[in-house]
Amino acid sequence: MNKKLFVILLVIIISVMASAVNLYAAGTVEFDRSNLAKGVIGVKYTSTVEKKTKFLVQLGEKSYQYNIKSANKFVYFPFQLGNGEYTVGVFENIEGTKYAPVVTEKVNIKLDDSSKVFLNSIQLVEWSDKMNTVSLAKELSKNKTTEKEKIEVLYQYMVQQFKYDFEKVKDLQYDYIPVIDEVLKKKLGICYDYSAVLASMLRSQNIKCKLVMGYTTNVKEFHAWNEIFVDGKWVTVDTTYDSSMFGAKVKYSFEKSKSDYTMSMEY
Image (cartoon, rainbow, N blue to C red):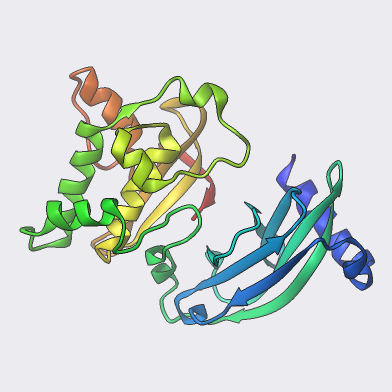
């Protein structure tokens, strides 16, 4: 569905149907606001009825929509659009492309450094000290003394140890989200997997890293890559592309030209 059209639809639903939330809502929602100062909010959605459900994060005319499922734990989402008054909300599918709000709220975000948003563990880039991926990142970087050295060793690990999964991409579901440790175990994945694992590793080492989705002149299809904060600037890095170059024994480079990459979404 067209992103702009979907946002318009949600706005219409919020304004017209807000008074009828209980009529349609099958689930309940809890928010964890304890980490708003880090630019992230937790959401726990619980429902006895299985239906498509969305979480909205909107600032002005810009927004992100995420697929969420009923679970007994909080899932975290970033405020990556900068400072301001956000609208957040959970929406359940009524029929077709129509969604009704379970709950919507206003959240004020004011960060001294908005780039710190890209250190958080979130739905698309999960990390914790309990994860094998984080343990590996610590092991690989333990003798490295600078951020650049840590970035280099983790980047090279992804490029040289992972391979692209051509079968997986054929059957990918619309709501697919990488399970970081499972991807690491197989060392096999699509561009989304590569980018999520590297971001998880780097963030766990307190290095700011974005998972970015959009288009590049290097790949025909919709693509995912990373931007890493190095020496005060965001550097474009594409481990999926470089992995294929490594496999073909072709020379590759860490930093890509920003002009070859067009961002649609960043997390």
